[in-house]
Length: 304
Image (tube, rainbow, N blue to C red; front, side, top):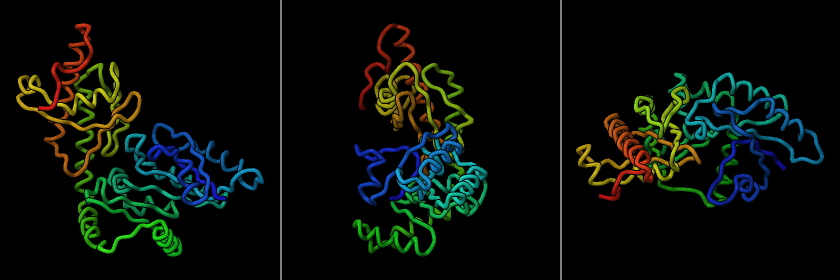
Protein backbone atom coordinates (compact mmCIF):
# COMPACT_ATOMS: atom_id res chain seq x y z
CA UNK A 1 0.00 0.00 0.00
CA UNK A 2 1.28 3.46 -0.90
CA UNK A 3 1.88 6.24 1.58
CA UNK A 4 1.33 9.82 0.52
CA UNK A 5 2.87 12.67 2.47
CA UNK A 6 1.21 15.99 1.77
CA UNK A 7 -0.18 19.18 3.25
CA UNK A 8 -3.29 18.92 5.40
CA UNK A 9 -6.55 19.91 3.72
CA UNK A 10 -10.20 18.93 3.66
CA UNK A 11 -12.72 18.49 0.91
CA UNK A 12 -16.31 18.77 1.99
CA UNK A 13 -16.86 16.88 5.26
CA UNK A 14 -14.54 14.00 4.37
CA UNK A 15 -11.06 14.22 5.95
CA UNK A 16 -8.27 14.49 3.40
CA UNK A 17 -6.69 11.25 4.63
CA UNK A 18 -9.81 9.28 3.66
CA UNK A 19 -10.07 10.57 0.08
CA UNK A 20 -7.06 8.69 -1.37
CA UNK A 21 -8.05 5.62 0.65
CA UNK A 22 -11.57 5.67 -0.79
CA UNK A 23 -10.58 6.41 -4.39
CA UNK A 24 -7.17 4.76 -4.81
CA UNK A 25 -6.74 2.41 -1.87
CA UNK A 26 -3.74 4.31 -0.51
CA UNK A 27 -2.93 5.89 2.84
CA UNK A 28 -1.82 9.47 3.42
CA UNK A 29 -0.06 11.21 6.27
CA UNK A 30 -0.20 14.97 6.70
CA UNK A 31 2.78 16.87 8.06
CA UNK A 32 2.59 20.35 9.59
CA UNK A 33 3.56 23.20 7.29
CA UNK A 34 6.06 25.85 8.27
CA UNK A 35 4.92 29.50 7.92
CA UNK A 36 6.51 29.81 4.46
CA UNK A 37 4.64 26.74 3.16
CA UNK A 38 7.59 24.35 3.30
CA UNK A 39 7.86 21.14 5.29
CA UNK A 40 10.50 20.57 7.95
CA UNK A 41 12.84 18.29 6.00
CA UNK A 42 14.07 16.54 9.13
CA UNK A 43 10.51 15.76 10.13
CA UNK A 44 9.75 14.61 6.59
CA UNK A 45 12.73 12.28 6.51
CA UNK A 46 11.90 10.92 9.95
CA UNK A 47 8.37 10.07 8.80
CA UNK A 48 9.77 8.32 5.72
CA UNK A 49 12.42 6.41 7.67
CA UNK A 50 9.87 5.13 10.20
CA UNK A 51 7.97 3.41 7.41
CA UNK A 52 10.76 2.61 4.95
CA UNK A 53 11.29 -1.15 4.99
CA UNK A 54 8.91 -1.58 7.93
CA UNK A 55 6.48 -4.50 8.11
CA UNK A 56 4.10 -2.47 10.23
CA UNK A 57 3.67 0.73 8.21
CA UNK A 58 2.31 1.49 4.76
CA UNK A 59 5.14 1.64 2.22
CA UNK A 60 6.10 5.28 1.41
CA UNK A 61 6.13 6.04 -2.31
CA UNK A 62 5.07 9.65 -2.94
CA UNK A 63 5.69 13.13 -1.52
CA UNK A 64 3.11 15.78 -2.44
CA UNK A 65 3.78 19.52 -2.32
CA UNK A 66 1.71 22.59 -3.20
CA UNK A 67 3.18 25.55 -5.12
CA UNK A 68 2.23 28.29 -4.55
CA UNK A 69 1.13 27.32 -1.07
CA UNK A 70 -2.42 28.46 -0.43
CA UNK A 71 -2.52 28.21 3.37
CA UNK A 72 0.76 30.11 3.62
CA UNK A 73 -0.77 33.01 1.70
CA UNK A 74 0.34 32.17 -1.83
CA UNK A 75 4.03 31.86 -1.06
CA UNK A 76 6.27 30.30 -3.70
CA UNK A 77 8.35 27.35 -2.57
CA UNK A 78 12.08 28.17 -2.84
CA UNK A 79 13.92 26.41 -5.66
CA UNK A 80 16.63 25.23 -3.26
CA UNK A 81 13.94 23.65 -1.06
CA UNK A 82 12.42 21.82 -4.04
CA UNK A 83 15.85 20.49 -4.92
CA UNK A 84 16.36 19.27 -1.34
CA UNK A 85 13.00 17.49 -1.38
CA UNK A 86 13.94 15.87 -4.68
CA UNK A 87 17.26 14.61 -3.32
CA UNK A 88 15.50 13.27 -0.23
CA UNK A 89 12.95 11.45 -2.40
CA UNK A 90 15.68 9.90 -4.55
CA UNK A 91 17.52 8.71 -1.46
CA UNK A 92 14.52 6.60 -0.47
CA UNK A 93 13.23 5.76 -3.93
CA UNK A 94 10.15 8.00 -3.72
CA UNK A 95 8.43 10.15 -6.31
CA UNK A 96 7.45 13.82 -5.97
CA UNK A 97 4.19 15.38 -7.14
CA UNK A 98 3.55 19.13 -7.13
CA UNK A 99 0.03 20.50 -6.92
CA UNK A 100 0.75 23.46 -9.15
CA UNK A 101 -2.69 25.05 -9.18
CA UNK A 102 -0.86 28.40 -9.04
CA UNK A 103 2.42 27.22 -10.55
CA UNK A 104 2.53 30.16 -12.98
CA UNK A 105 2.20 32.57 -10.06
CA UNK A 106 5.29 30.98 -8.52
CA UNK A 107 7.20 31.22 -11.81
CA UNK A 108 6.35 34.90 -12.24
CA UNK A 109 7.15 35.74 -8.62
CA UNK A 110 10.55 34.01 -8.86
CA UNK A 111 11.23 35.32 -12.39
CA UNK A 112 11.99 31.83 -13.74
CA UNK A 113 10.56 29.57 -16.41
CA UNK A 114 8.04 27.03 -15.02
CA UNK A 115 10.42 24.26 -16.08
CA UNK A 116 12.93 25.50 -13.48
CA UNK A 117 10.34 24.61 -10.85
CA UNK A 118 8.98 21.37 -12.31
CA UNK A 119 12.42 19.87 -12.95
CA UNK A 120 12.43 18.78 -9.33
CA UNK A 121 9.24 16.70 -9.52
CA UNK A 122 7.96 13.57 -11.29
CA UNK A 123 4.50 14.94 -11.96
CA UNK A 124 2.72 18.28 -11.74
CA UNK A 125 -0.81 19.62 -12.13
CA UNK A 126 -1.62 23.11 -13.37
CA UNK A 127 -4.95 24.90 -13.09
CA UNK A 128 -6.08 27.25 -15.86
CA UNK A 129 -9.12 28.63 -14.02
CA UNK A 130 -7.36 30.43 -11.17
CA UNK A 131 -4.88 33.21 -11.86
CA UNK A 132 -4.74 32.44 -15.59
CA UNK A 133 -8.41 33.42 -15.90
CA UNK A 134 -9.81 30.57 -18.01
CA UNK A 135 -13.41 29.55 -17.18
CA UNK A 136 -12.36 25.96 -16.42
CA UNK A 137 -9.68 23.40 -17.08
CA UNK A 138 -6.50 21.87 -15.71
CA UNK A 139 -3.63 19.79 -17.03
CA UNK A 140 -1.55 16.97 -15.57
CA UNK A 141 2.03 16.47 -16.74
CA UNK A 142 4.58 13.73 -16.19
CA UNK A 143 6.22 10.80 -17.94
CA UNK A 144 4.34 9.28 -20.88
CA UNK A 145 3.42 6.08 -19.00
CA UNK A 146 2.21 8.07 -16.01
CA UNK A 147 -0.03 10.30 -18.14
CA UNK A 148 -1.43 7.24 -19.95
CA UNK A 149 -2.36 5.66 -16.63
CA UNK A 150 -3.82 8.95 -15.34
CA UNK A 151 -5.97 9.11 -18.48
CA UNK A 152 -7.25 5.59 -17.82
CA UNK A 153 -8.04 6.35 -14.18
CA UNK A 154 -9.81 9.56 -15.12
CA UNK A 155 -12.10 7.61 -17.46
CA UNK A 156 -12.57 4.97 -14.76
CA UNK A 157 -13.79 7.66 -12.35
CA UNK A 158 -16.15 9.15 -14.92
CA UNK A 159 -14.10 12.11 -16.09
CA UNK A 160 -13.90 13.28 -19.68
CA UNK A 161 -15.00 15.93 -22.14
CA UNK A 162 -15.33 15.76 -25.90
CA UNK A 163 -15.48 19.47 -26.78
CA UNK A 164 -12.26 20.15 -24.91
CA UNK A 165 -10.97 22.50 -27.59
CA UNK A 166 -13.27 25.25 -26.30
CA UNK A 167 -11.58 25.11 -22.90
CA UNK A 168 -8.14 24.61 -24.44
CA UNK A 169 -8.51 27.86 -26.41
CA UNK A 170 -9.22 29.83 -23.24
CA UNK A 171 -6.35 28.08 -21.46
CA UNK A 172 -3.98 28.99 -24.30
CA UNK A 173 -4.90 32.66 -24.04
CA UNK A 174 -4.34 32.51 -20.30
CA UNK A 175 -0.88 31.01 -20.78
CA UNK A 176 0.09 33.52 -23.47
CA UNK A 177 -0.89 36.44 -21.23
CA UNK A 178 0.23 34.84 -17.96
CA UNK A 179 3.24 37.00 -17.15
CA UNK A 180 1.48 40.32 -17.69
CA UNK A 181 -1.74 39.22 -15.98
CA UNK A 182 -0.14 37.60 -12.95
CA UNK A 183 2.37 40.38 -12.40
CA UNK A 184 -0.53 42.83 -12.28
CA UNK A 185 -2.35 40.59 -9.79
CA UNK A 186 0.75 40.42 -7.61
CA UNK A 187 1.16 44.19 -7.69
CA UNK A 188 -2.48 44.72 -6.73
CA UNK A 189 -2.25 42.22 -3.87
CA UNK A 190 0.86 43.95 -2.51
CA UNK A 191 -0.81 47.35 -2.82
CA UNK A 192 -3.75 46.02 -0.79
CA UNK A 193 -1.39 44.72 1.89
CA UNK A 194 0.48 48.03 2.00
CA UNK A 195 -2.84 49.85 2.25
CA UNK A 196 -3.81 47.79 5.28
CA UNK A 197 -0.54 48.74 6.95
CA UNK A 198 -1.24 52.40 6.17
CA UNK A 199 -4.69 52.09 7.79
CA UNK A 200 -2.90 51.25 11.04
CA UNK A 201 -6.15 49.80 12.37
CA UNK A 202 -6.21 47.55 15.46
CA UNK A 203 -8.87 45.55 13.64
CA UNK A 204 -6.63 44.05 10.95
CA UNK A 205 -2.98 43.60 10.04
CA UNK A 206 -0.80 41.85 7.46
CA UNK A 207 2.75 40.63 7.07
CA UNK A 208 4.18 42.29 3.96
CA UNK A 209 7.03 39.77 3.83
CA UNK A 210 4.48 36.98 3.32
CA UNK A 211 2.82 38.64 0.31
CA UNK A 212 4.65 37.16 -2.67
CA UNK A 213 1.92 36.52 -5.24
CA UNK A 214 -1.84 37.13 -5.54
CA UNK A 215 -2.99 36.15 -2.04
CA UNK A 216 -3.13 38.29 1.10
CA UNK A 217 -3.84 36.80 4.51
CA UNK A 218 -5.32 39.43 6.82
CA UNK A 219 -5.16 38.87 10.58
CA UNK A 220 -8.35 40.02 12.29
CA UNK A 221 -8.72 41.11 15.93
CA UNK A 222 -11.78 42.16 17.86
CA UNK A 223 -14.42 40.25 15.91
CA UNK A 224 -14.81 36.90 14.12
CA UNK A 225 -13.37 36.85 10.56
CA UNK A 226 -16.71 35.69 9.16
CA UNK A 227 -18.37 38.76 10.66
CA UNK A 228 -15.83 41.06 9.05
CA UNK A 229 -16.49 39.36 5.70
CA UNK A 230 -20.21 39.99 6.15
CA UNK A 231 -19.62 43.71 6.78
CA UNK A 232 -17.34 43.97 3.75
CA UNK A 233 -19.88 42.30 1.47
CA UNK A 234 -22.90 44.30 2.64
CA UNK A 235 -23.69 47.88 1.55
CA UNK A 236 -25.68 50.56 3.35
CA UNK A 237 -27.06 54.10 3.18
CA UNK A 238 -24.49 55.06 5.79
CA UNK A 239 -21.66 53.98 3.49
CA UNK A 240 -23.14 55.90 0.56
CA UNK A 241 -23.54 59.03 2.65
CA UNK A 242 -19.97 58.95 4.00
CA UNK A 243 -18.00 57.69 1.00
CA UNK A 244 -20.15 58.65 -1.98
CA UNK A 245 -20.42 55.05 -3.25
CA UNK A 246 -21.28 51.55 -2.14
CA UNK A 247 -18.83 48.71 -2.65
CA UNK A 248 -19.29 45.00 -1.97
CA UNK A 249 -16.04 43.17 -1.24
CA UNK A 250 -15.86 39.37 -1.17
CA UNK A 251 -13.23 37.94 1.16
CA UNK A 252 -13.06 34.45 2.66
CA UNK A 253 -12.91 33.66 6.41
CA UNK A 254 -9.88 31.39 6.26
CA UNK A 255 -9.31 30.54 9.91
CA UNK A 256 -10.27 31.60 13.42
CA UNK A 257 -8.17 34.77 13.08
CA UNK A 258 -7.62 35.38 9.38
CA UNK A 259 -9.46 36.25 6.20
CA UNK A 260 -8.07 35.59 2.72
CA UNK A 261 -8.11 38.00 -0.21
CA UNK A 262 -7.27 36.67 -3.70
CA UNK A 263 -6.64 38.65 -6.90
CA UNK A 264 -7.45 37.48 -10.43
CA UNK A 265 -7.55 38.99 -13.91
CA UNK A 266 -10.94 40.67 -13.37
CA UNK A 267 -9.80 42.67 -10.31
CA UNK A 268 -8.18 45.94 -11.37
CA UNK A 269 -5.98 48.40 -9.53
CA UNK A 270 -9.05 50.66 -9.20
CA UNK A 271 -11.03 47.76 -7.70
CA UNK A 272 -8.19 47.25 -5.24
CA UNK A 273 -8.37 50.87 -4.09
CA UNK A 274 -12.16 50.59 -3.70
CA UNK A 275 -11.67 47.46 -1.58
CA UNK A 276 -9.15 49.29 0.59
CA UNK A 277 -11.54 52.19 1.06
CA UNK A 278 -14.32 49.78 2.03
CA UNK A 279 -12.07 48.04 4.53
CA UNK A 280 -11.12 51.43 5.98
CA UNK A 281 -14.80 52.39 6.30
CA UNK A 282 -15.71 49.10 8.01
CA UNK A 283 -12.70 49.26 10.34
CA UNK A 284 -13.54 52.83 11.32
CA UNK A 285 -17.17 52.00 12.06
CA UNK A 286 -16.21 48.95 14.08
CA UNK A 287 -13.82 51.01 16.20
CA UNK A 288 -16.44 53.70 16.77
CA UNK A 289 -18.95 51.14 18.01
CA UNK A 290 -16.42 49.40 20.22
CA UNK A 291 -15.46 52.76 21.71
CA UNK A 292 -19.14 53.39 22.48
CA UNK A 293 -19.47 49.99 24.11
CA UNK A 294 -21.65 48.58 21.35
CA UNK A 295 -21.12 45.57 19.09
CA UNK A 296 -18.78 46.11 16.14
CA UNK A 297 -20.03 46.81 12.64
CA UNK A 298 -21.41 49.69 10.53
CA UNK A 299 -24.80 50.92 11.70
CA UNK A 300 -27.72 49.67 9.64
CA UNK A 301 -25.53 47.55 7.38
CA UNK A 302 -27.62 45.68 4.86
CA UNK A 303 -28.08 44.99 1.17
CA UNK A 304 -28.72 48.16 -0.86
